[in-house]
Structure formats: structure tokens, C-alpha cells
Image (cartoon, rainbow, N blue to C red; front, side):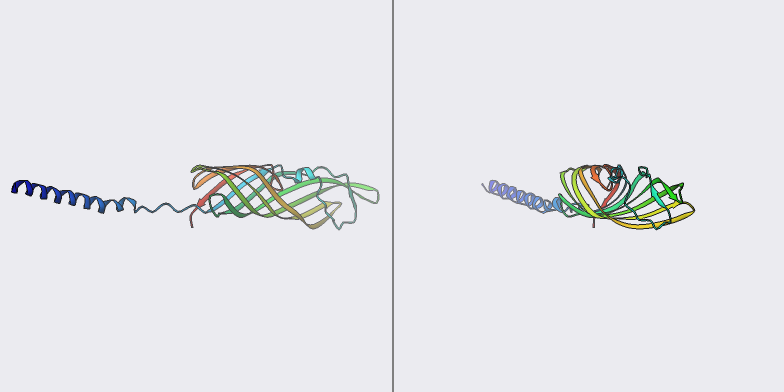
Length: 211
């Protein structure tokens, strides 16, 4: 009888030691710190088919001694842009975007019934504030829409007839992003479809990092 009692006591002591060790080791499995969210994003890219393509000649007032008419449609290589986004949560992000594009066109100058070619160069610098809404948020793919408003600064130059005239204008700037898709985690690429001063189709690279 004593042997049976001794065996029961021994088994109870062993089982209590096993459970105490498992209790001690269990918390260590949950001590891993989750990765910090990538709340900051810098990006750069190229866009084409700005709204200025379809608006015709930009309104400028050159201080020249001749009359300008017969404008041609402006042409451009597209726009390049850089920007920053701050991701407030998994849905909303805010930021800013700067862009540059150059439009060139020709016209006819007339002075004392003499006609000569005139070259017009509009250098546009754009700045907008943006807000975006992400509706698909997966580890390597994000889909979003957004809108931005700001200002466009036009630094225009007209050359012809031995003269060079300049003009400065301010125009509204804005971009409506109907759909944007970003691929990648920290480093990735994106493509956007929309309409505005930055273009119908924009694409580029971006880098996300934590605070």
C-alpha cells in the first residue's frame, strides 16, 4: 500500500513539473514584436496625355512689338513627377505631388506686314495635395483611388523677329485618380489611370518605410 501511495505522489510531482515548465515556455512563444507598418512612401514616375494636350494653346500675354496669330497645337514629351504619401491607416493616405512638363508650339508673328515664325515654350511646374483611398490592401498588391488639387505655374517664353518675350501665369492644377494599382512590399511599382494636369496614364516606382 505504501508503495502505491509513493508511486502516486511521485507521478503527481512529475506531472506538476511538466505543466509548470509548459506554462513558463508558452509566453516566450508570443514575445515576437509584429513588424512596424510602412507608413511613409516616396515615389517618382512619368505621365502622359495631360489635360493641357486637349485644352489648346495656353493663355499668355507676351510684351512684344509684333502681333502673334496662327498658333499650332502644343506638343510635349509628357511630365515627370515626384511625391510623398503618409499612410494614416490601411485605407486613407495623404501627401503631396510635384510635376514638371514642357509644352512647345509655333505661331506666326506679323510686324509692318512682314510675317515670321515664332516659337513658344511653356514650362509648367505643378504642385498638388492628394488624398487616396485604398480598397484592396494585400501584402503585395494595393488598389486605390484618389483626388488632388493645387496650382500650376507657367513660365512662358516667345522667340521671334529677333525678340524674346516672357510671361508668367498661374493655372489651377488637379488630378483625379480613377484607379491605381501598386505591386510590391517596401519597394514596388505602380500604374494609375485618371484625368487631370498630370495625365491620363501615370506609372513609376515607389519605396515604403516605417517611422
